[in-house]
Length: 159
Image (cartoon, rainbow, N blue to C red):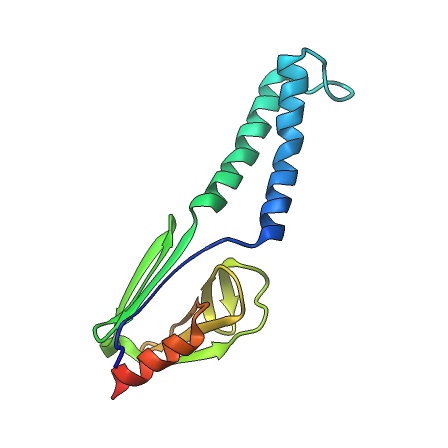
């Protein structure tokens, strides 16, 4: 009888990485052309500092997507969720009014989605998640790629 659920999710969608690397290629090419080859880019040309700032900014966004991780652990003591590098939530069952695995559909994208019908949604991909309503009325949802396993663990914990 399984009473612990753990899951680690990262952005692995091929099309997302194609988009990110495609966008990142533009400032990297501009950086190479203007700084390394010495051929000004643009009319009027952008400054070297501007080219570097844009390239660093876009590469930082790509690096952020590389490190973002959604970790979930659910056991008899409660629900623990870490959306690294942004936040961590720990909620004991004593503060949870209702918890249910649902199909939440599309909530405007992935990441941290605010002001949805489910409260704050923390998701990486897909449309299944653990919808939680706290005793104080607040709600949030944690996305999962393993809904059947999560349902089984929840049923075993509630016994």
